[in-house]
Length: 261
Ligand SMILES: C[S@@+](CC[C@H](N)C(=O)[O-])C[C@H]1O[C@@H](n2cnc3c(N)ncnc32)[C@H](O)[C@@H]1O
Image (cartoon, rainbow, N blue to C red; front, side):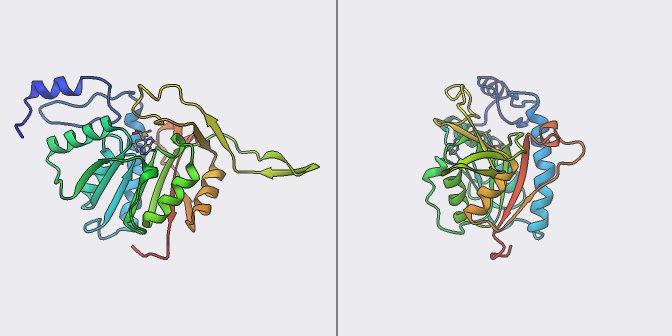
């Protein structure tokens, strides 16, 4: 394929919509970010996630299979690729995957080790334990069946899954009636319903569904119910993006310790 000129690259990256990630495409051309705050969101995620990958895979990811679920334009797939992994990035939106493929081609990343495909995660048919590492970043709160997504994620993950999600601020238990007058339950885990208003024009949004935003207790309970046995919430570093520091977003590790790295 003919290399794009600088002018062609500039025209392409600035043909809307703006981007989820800032890719440096050389010759001074960078993809314009949709929201400036995304820069520190991604920096915080990288700072929190990369040391974990080094800890769990001390020999690197060479020869390991990784899945980046809902990869959007593929930035986190690139990070895994640069760590040596064989990576599959998937997203439900064709436009995101087209961009991911075009950026990959411009950066010259080996298609034998990095593949981007359009896939609704609920249609994933991978075999059990296919991926040594799965990334499930920014999707849990954009789907109407989070439990079934996490069961699927548990099935296809061999060792470690990293889940990143928006969180509600609900810390007090929800009180619910239960079958008899005067009998109530105190339920610490809860989810808030959100009908996203911008699914047609926002390529970061839910695709066609109601969204369920969990609180911290719900994330833990969903992951345990899906079959993960060790769940850890990562602490944000002091200079993290404020959403992580105030608990509006969180990063969780979910392990299948029966499968060593
Ligand atoms: C907030 S973005 C997160 C992107 C990336 N994972 C990250 O966190 O940097 C949510 C992404 O989920 C994708 N998405 C929504 N529903 C999906 C589904 N059912 N299966 C796969 N991807 C989906 C959207 O197209 C969008 O790219």
